[in-house]
Amino acid sequence: MGNRLQNYYLIYIEFLGYRYHGWQKQPNVKTIQSVVDKTFSFVLGHSDFKTLGASRTDARVSANRAAFELFTRDPLDESQLLDDLNFNLPSDIRVLSVEAVDRDFNILQASKNKEYLYFFSSGGKNHPFSAPFIVYMMEKLDIEKMQEGARIFEGIHHFHNYCYKPGAETVFEREIMLSEIKENDIYTASFFPEKSYVFCVHGKGFLRHQVRLMMGALFMLGKGEITPDYLRESLRKGVEIPLPFMAPQQGLMLNNISFERESGAKG
Image 1 (cartoon, rainbow, N blue to C red):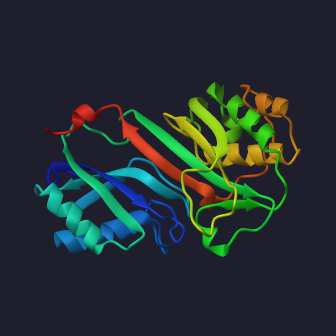
Image 2: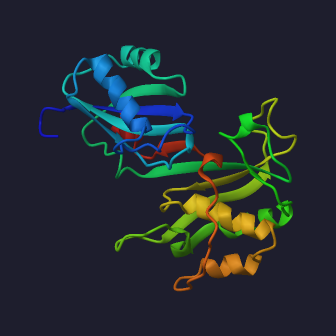
């Protein structure tokens, strides 16, 4: 970025990801970042800026509170920028806040807490309007067994079986602070199924596709294809266990992301 981009902003954002190919810019597809950057170019009147996301989201994944950092050449009026962005962004993307931070704040290295939700239902096909929010399983699921299985993930474990195409330096040991399945009372709509469920999982960091692979294993457990002991074995270091089912993207939501280094904020 050189020395020309000397103003820094932490921006929180929410979006419905159903028609996007994730956060990060990619050639020939529409992503959240590409739409956000196009809007910045229009609002600022130039392209001398950079955006950097706190984390990537998969195609069709939504976010209730995601974050990215904006680097600009000139200082900006935060309140005016918030209004200008929301006026010009499409209706499925909304900026929640704009906050100036100092140069020591690093959105990639700052310690984070992330909360994911995964919404699903069982036993019948849902109204089509539910498709961007809830995944349905035609099979009847043993919810109690899935709730038991979700609790197995809590604590510090080795998640090598829950990472898609890991790199040579990937750290597989991760701590899950909360992992539970409960009836969905978070989001409701007249076209939602009469009963739906949500898998809630909290941690400081997640591997690529980790939550979807965890949910896929819980679906397998609910269908009687694996046992709770199978899940426990899958979390042991050095034990290679196939987990062939990755849950679909659209049930997943990044519900919240927060930073422990809020001292990087100005004022």
